[in-house]
Amino acid sequence: MATNPAEVLSLPKPAWAADEVGMLYDMAHRFMSEEIAPRYDEFEKNEMVDRESWLKAGAAGLLCASMPEEYGGSGGTFAHESAIIEAIGHVGVDGFGIGLHNSIVAPYVLHYGSEEQKKKWLPKLATGELIGAIAMTEPGAGSDLQGVKTRAQKDGNQYKINGSKTFITNGQLANFIIVVTKTDPEKGAKGTSLIVVETDEVEGFQRGRNLDKIGLKANDTSELFFNDMRVPTSNLLGHEEGQGFVQLMQQLPQERLQIGTGAIAMIERALALTIDYVKERKAFGKAIIDFQNTQFKLAELKTEATIGRVFYNDCVTRHIAGGLDPVTASMAKYWLSDLQGKVVDECLQLHGGYGYMNEYPIARMFRDARVQRIYGGTNEIMKLLIGRSL
Image 1 (cartoon, rainbow, N blue to C red):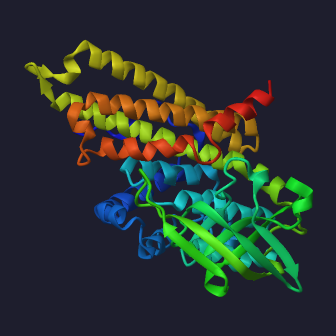
Image 2 (cartoon, rainbow, N blue to C red; image 1 turned 180 degrees about the vertical axis):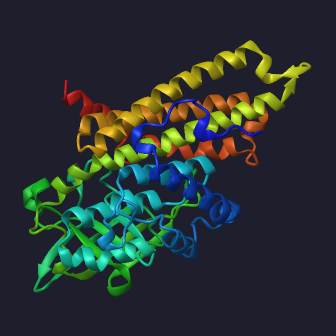
Image 3 (tube, helix red, strand yellow; image 1 turned 30 degrees about the horizontal axis):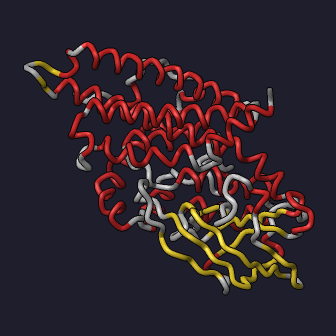
């Protein structure tokens, strides 16, 4: 019988994962197993999950689970988003970018949008009619968001936006993009604003190529170009210009915790698959699990994974209660993604030569894990943020 990733660490469920959150996990796991996993090789080849799958996810209640019911969501918390992301990781369809859509893009609208904006956009994000992205990174500005060059100039009741973005997750499919831009370059961070672009309704918007990545092939990641692109001034998030940097800083802890969600889920799947493999695979007349080195390695990995899961569960508990500070979120992002890389690498080693073959899931996991230490702010930046708190 295959080892269950959700049970590989033998830990009791935290309070936040009980009852309806557990039921949502089961539903999300079933949806990903039945609707996404059978077509995942196709999505990897096409380098995107198709729009139909997004609409199916919306119909199944897997989009905007933490948004209020009055705006088309399910009225949950980050615990519900965690359940969905964990299901994605446990099934192994990590390139389905609904985590960013649900717990990064939609919250900007909820927290900073006007009542009119929330009623207009959130229900469509919940159905999948709108697919969300956030355009932060530029060719010359990655983790340093103050270095953004994209410019929005007010012209009557419109903004004229010029600039370019790169490495934008969901970039080929997204038709709802929050653009990080400078409305007053002279003010530095205080001149940064967030402006929503509904790409189906604007001129001057152009998608670049779907970028050729090492891993997460099923997730479309793109360049975006704005050439005198005009959007209504009513698409500004917040009651006035210049709030963008503060808004980003307030929401980044959840983004970084979400990266930790994907990390711990993949860690658990890697361990489950590897335990099953070493029990079946034989060398020198006995199962690989019977070698002391195998047992010691897996003992170390299970111990570290357990520490990681306990830390993660505590972070979610604190976040739901409104007490997850940016420093602890940075710790979760960097430490869990580092651990993810270590565990997946060690698990691949225990697969031997088969671990290097693409037909084995651990090979894909090895590729997919690597970016976790880069996006959402590199792990070096996380350490810098933690260091400032000392």
